[in-house]
Amino acid sequence: MQAPRYLVSFDADTALHRFTDILVIGAGIAGLRAALEVPPDLAVLVVTKDRLTESNSTYAQGGLAGVLSPEDRFEDHVQDTLIAGDGLCDPEVVDLVVREAPGEIERLIQWGTRFDVENGSLALTREGGHSHRRIVHALGDATGFEVMRAIIARARQMPHITLWDDSFTLDLLTDEGRCVGAILQRGEWGRILVWARQVILASGGCGMVYRETTNPPVATGDGMAAAWRAGAQLRDMEFMQFHPTMLYVAGSARYLISEAVRGEGAYLRDVHGERFMLHYDPRAELAPRDIVARAIFQTMERTQHPNVYLDLSHLDPEKVRQRFPGINRVCRAFGLDITRDRIPVRPGAHYMIGGVTVDRDGRTTLSGLWAAGEVTSSGLHGANRLASNSLIEGLVFGARCGRFAAEAARSERERPVPRSLRFLLPPPDNSDRLDIADLTASLRSLMVRKMGIIRDAQRLREAQQDVDFWCRYVLFREFDTRAGWELQNLLAVARLMIDAALRREESRGTHFRSDFPQRDDVHWAGRHVLAPPRQEIPAADLHPAPLSHPVDATERSSPAAPEPVPVRSPIANP
View 1 (cartoon, rainbow, N blue to C red):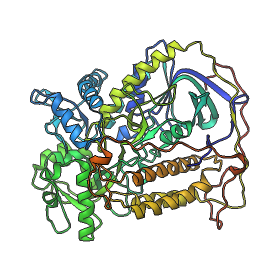
View 2: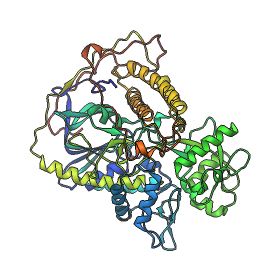
View 3: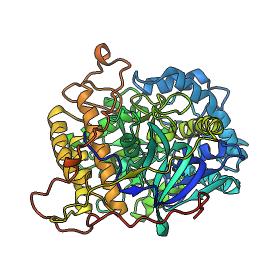
View 4: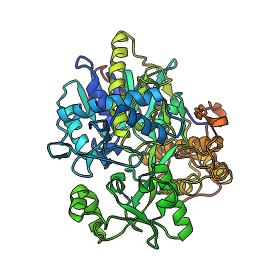
């Protein structure tokens, strides 16, 4: 797959600069946990493209999984994770994360996180795929909000940590095969080159590549695309987990209905009132997410109805309202009483299991670059993530990235920072116009239709052809807006996802091929699908392919690279 090395033109000799020991890209749970692990004698800069509170971590409802009761064992949590991962987990990584989870939960409590308690002890619930009640939660169904409140407050107390919001990471800077920083677009400051001795990527997922998603608008795969352009290895991009139960009210925003609702005993019913999960899996509503999502999809196809329904009417009404105050509040806005009315739900893209390949310390294949959280493929989730294991993964790998990146930064303190890098995209052909919003919507719709819960070769090839065409005339343009850069990143990620889905000719975990409906351990046991590396482009081919016809524009590609900002002091601190 061909793409320019960088999204934008730049010249390090004339740009605005910032220097730091550790650069953390992303301010979700993984990024801030990494920053907090770095010792106070090293300077840490954390950047995020929106508000500090705008991340998938903040919107997490369910909770954090950890062995915290005497009835539970580490071995049980490990086994549940391996079963959900459908033969593709790294058992040593699973054991590592499971054993470190209770300590990370205790640290959150020490930092001021107020988890729900019951009879003087942490309240534990159970979710799909778990054999025991081991999920801690906060504010009923607003765990992510409470955890991020505490961890952001802690980070703000640390004098060696600087937090920048409104800072879009355009690309990772590399020099002689090593990551040396990143190019940012920061609010009124414009373009900045941030040089770092070590970089930690914790930019989250890419749920916005689908029209139906539980993710916030910031989840556009920027970190995955930037890492791929920089030469880091990505793998298992076919494994997008679809959350089974997203509130579906036509014409409204989509809201996540937590896995914990089924964990507390809710039933799934079709439009005729039949409890259909009993026909698909002996665990019924407590089956892993991939099984439940496919069952809902197939039920919607069978009944020709746009959704199914969650039914809590048989549960104690007071307990339901107390346990799920946020869900109750959202549903009431649509005139739904969750203790009496059936809640319309359907699956939505939720969590990218694949991503940047990392080892057990969070080290990527690109020297100087570490990664943690949803942007990665760590080996914990395998082919399907077990509910409430993601926040724990972010904490454990965030801590490890912070610790080992700090050690690497100390050993390279005298390394000179290169300052002669430059990259120039040719001026675009402005004979046509591009409607970024329309193309983004078309991509997201295509991914639902042809790269959704159930896939086959014909639809995947059709999707590949369409995305290839869009890539040819979009990836080679230079935009000056966030919407344009996000579209380029979504296209790159979508293309890698489709390629991986075509290559994995079996069904495993979240990846289901109707033309290869069985898991194939003869050919695919333990095998990862590696994303193809970015191909260099001959200079003569850098101009974008023209559109076959003009499109009405809401935004236009940049007429030229912006005027570079004069270089400032090496300790510039905007």
